[in-house]
Image 1 (spheres, helix red, strand yellow):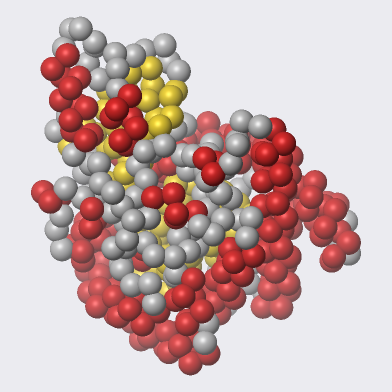
Image 2 (image 1 turned 120 degrees about the horizontal axis):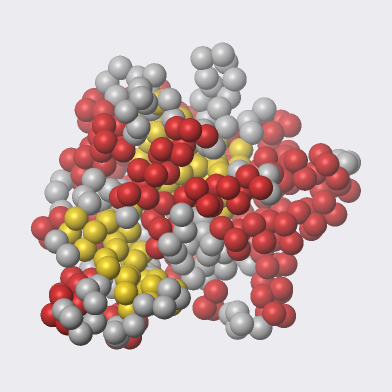
Length: 418
């Protein structure tokens, strides 16, 4: 739906179904009721998630036309897509395999190009008859623990190889823009333990690899000047600001946005999501309280997804753990605060002795109201099936509560639906 902050929708990765038939059935079951509850008079926006198999099936003309007709009849539209998880994402152990295949592979390139071809057909036009811009979010190139990341030569090899494949997609986006007048962007999503983990790493990759390699390739391939090639790269490659991920890394929203602005880089979309956090009582003074927080985190230890933890120590240092069991085992008196990558419901602020990073969402939305640094906002909470039992409710009711929190609580007071 369109708000004064931009297009707002929810990511359909919350729905199971790795084939297009199964995923479409889930959409048909849930979306009409959600539109009725949330946007009865105005078009309802979706962030579409397609597995590789589903994308191959949806690209078939008969399926794509049928989906277009259904969207029109349902009063819905697709303005962004989630191209991070390639394969199974529900009812299977995902963990680090969420990055498979990574950006070193042709499979990731082909999948991403296919998503953009589909999006170029699905993107609606605005009230002036112009196609809106659209993005596809993607993985942060790869998973750093698969490589000898501490070796400069290994880092350079992976960054060069993945960047070349990203530029292959950029070239496709330039061609699609010329052919269809659809401006689309690839939105890299930094996350803990990704090859790109922080805002600084995104900027360093962009300036040290993407721009220089892109200038060399695109100037010869499309006859562009250096300035035109750099502008095209900045148009077609942007940051996916996943609020949960940046909060886990203790990165302040204003700092991230200021850094991007300094280098002329853009945010493609905001993924509105929340992580878990807690400050531990002082060691010695309240050891029982410290263990209560530790045990509360342990209740969220489940085997499906990675739940990276970043601990802030009493000295202010950040210590990163690849998964929640690693942090639970390493817990000691030097740990002052934990933040855990577990996409909890955004409308819940307190979990007894734990809290969510809901304040970061509020701050990002406040900055969006001030700066309008993107036009795409996507609620992304996909962990309903693995939440503790007391937090589970019916899926449609859950999505409704997520969206209503953004519309009534999360948005600044002056923001109105349009």
